[in-house]
Image (tube, rainbow, N blue to C red; front, side):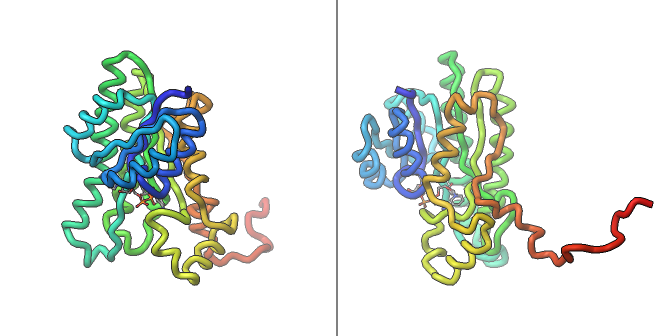
Length: 257
Ligand SMILES: NC(=O)c1ccc[n+]([C@@H]2O[C@H](COP(=O)([O-])OP(=O)(O)OC[C@H]3O[C@@H](n4cnc5c(N)ncnc54)[C@H](O)[C@@H]3O)[C@@H](O)[C@H]2O)c1
């Protein structure tokens, strides 16, 4: 047995795949989701897994879930939402909802697990799911990009404060993933083809690509990695200058004088 792991937002999409790979690696998995039916479906497919019904933003409910499951060796703060619109049209309701789930949720769950690990006198690992939007904002993302930048910085904050207690904290920034919340965007064949072609390795990412990175950061193989944001995007965020014109060869530039 590799230990225990709680994955938030594991009822579908990337979180469900993280839960599946974790079970395959021998973890006892807590499949946590606000959507009980979805959590039960995923947990029902996996050995040793249990469905945990909770909103990551509700501290009392999160504590009750930890009382039942126990303190996990690995917490994956994966639950997240997006509300697309230009900032000029973005409602405060949408703004607050996205901040609450994407930023407050990882804080609430991370704090609860870290407090328990420290009280129990043992180390653990937290992996937060950020996004390449936390590095490079995309159009019409509303509060989403700002919250994901916040997750990257919250990760570093957790890492410096909880590292001395033996708790490593990292984040994974998925690129354009052919699953979960991106599915409605990628349903348009033209958008799909463009996004794939503009990715340096020429394909969209999969939930499995992200799960592998999360599992690695949660494992002892990453035992000296903390405070890191691991970008898993096929090279997309490196393309910011790729569209800038520049000739292949320019005589006389930077010649020694
Ligand atoms: N899919 C992508 O292209 C992509 C890219 C970059 C980052 N991400 C990030 O990956 C993570 C997973 O995304 P996904 O695409 O699998 O999303 P998804 O919408 O398919 O799944 C999210 C899950 O989280 C659950 N959830 C939402 N709010 C919750 C709450 N308060 N408490 C508990 N559960 C809650 C939902 O019920 C759902 O099962 C998110 O943090 C997202 O921002 C996704």
